[in-house]
Length: 252
Image (cartoon, rainbow, N blue to C red; front, side, top):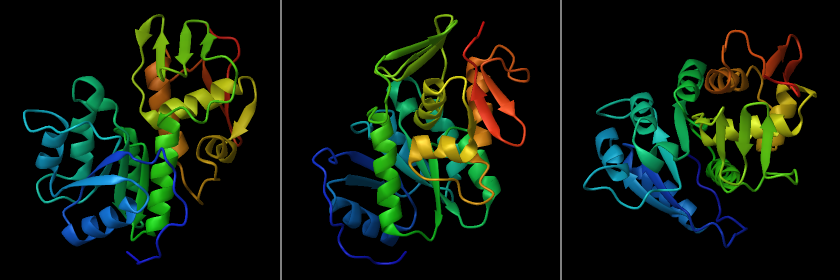
């Protein structure tokens, strides 16, 4: 990781608590010091077991606002940690996860997104990009990207509450990650419009997709599994071949 100068901008709201699960103590220290300059407090755990214990159990601390999770850990890989985190009871299962992956290994990214990671960052990375991605995830979690006047969007039996950041179908809760919620909300706000993958990414993250990035497709599959009666024959989120996706105005 390259050493860079102190960040030039500060935000009062950036006093969030982060948990970094990373076996490289030197990297964790550097990241903690860098993010600390922007008001982010980082708790470090060196393996998956102690990281999960920090989130749930007798030794658990305050619930973090975000988990930075390394893929390669000494006791279990980051994918298993993410899977177990998403299976925890209560609010702990909803904590956003930013996964650090090996550069040039897209399969790990795809699997990570499928099991509930909100974003990924390949190593080695620029600290400024890490900070930017953390800021983006936290903004999304706080609901800062909502644009429409209505707080609750309803499409037939599907209900999207942007204040509570919850989704339900016929009154039953649909489990989505923070990032998947933002994708769904962004598309619902633009119901009836065909959106390219770049347009969807721009609406949620404020940037276009990287070349050959298929993470949107992975997330769409997860969202469909949560909100469609039959994910293989979707009626809410439709694929427009060669273009992207459209969120149907008329449903149920």
